[in-house]
Each structure stands twice: as C-alpha cells, then as structure tokens.
Length: 194
Image (cartoon, rainbow, N blue to C red; front, side, top):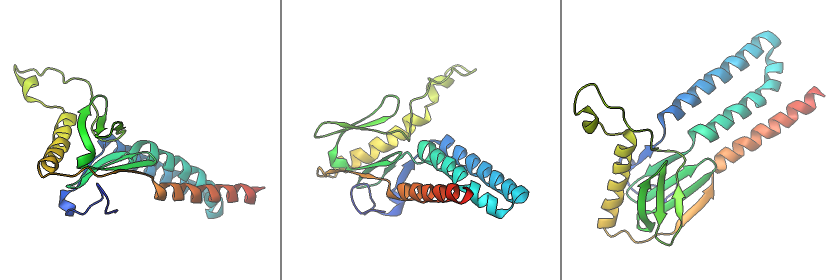
C-alpha cells in the first residue's frame, strides 16, 4: 500500500472498499472454471499438455479479473483511490470538489476535471414498490447508502481542513506484470508445440 493520498497513513480500520458484489462472484466462478478446465486437461492429456494450455486459460481469467473484479473505490481518512481497470487515481480529500452519482460515482476535482469510477456503487433501476404501503419510502438503494458513506468521509476531512493535495495517476503494475508473465508463457507454449 502506498502512503500517498488514499494510500493509508490512517489506521486500517479507516479504510473502506466499495466493489460490486457481482464482481466477487464472477471472479470466483471464473477461477473455479479455470481450475476445472486445467484439471481436466491434466487428467486427460497429462501435466505437460495442461502446462501448454494453462496460459490461455489464465489469460481469460486475467481478462475477467481486470474487466470485472479489479475496479473499485477505496476511501480512508486521507483521500480516495479510484481503481479503474489498469489505471489508478489517488486524490486527497482536499482535491475533491463534489461527489455525485449518475450511472457511477464521479469525483469532481477542485482544479477542474473529473474521475469516474467503473467500480463501486452504481445507480441501478429504482426500487419496485413493496406489497405493503410505505415500504418503498423506507427502502434505500445500496448505491445511495454507499455514496452517503463516501460523502461522510469527505465531509469529515473537509471539516478538519484537508488541504488540496495533488491528484496522482498511475498504472496497475502488478496486473501488467502478470499479463507480461502470461504472455511470455503463451509464446513459449506456442514455440514448444511447433
């Protein structure tokens, strides 16, 4: 973990991560399918053949990880980290001008510009009215509750006098290294089979 904005000078209990629950289910289901496919290949064709097939299965699993699972919002006392696929944006709370929920959470920045989050709370369809009168008024969408938690952390930092910190953008290096390793393995598998 970095020590920059959104990176964790606060206590670990201060940190909250917002990610779609379906992302966790999709990654687990994909990992189970990958293990079953590779296990079947190892049983039917042997371990050597399974090792030649493995990079292609792992490449598909990496794609699911990047496209579905990795995008999230992480907040702590220092700021926010928006992780969108392979891009990471860290911003201190002093750099955030407004937080809004359209289809996804959008952080408007003080110097202009905005950071849209692909992961985290998303505006879904409106709640259906319940069978009992007044049930729809009492029910609050999970995205609205999550947005309230994010705004609450932002308000606390703003009230404490958070100074505008810079916005730092970086790449998801571990995911890119994993992609490079899988690509080298896949090229090696192709060369071995020729």
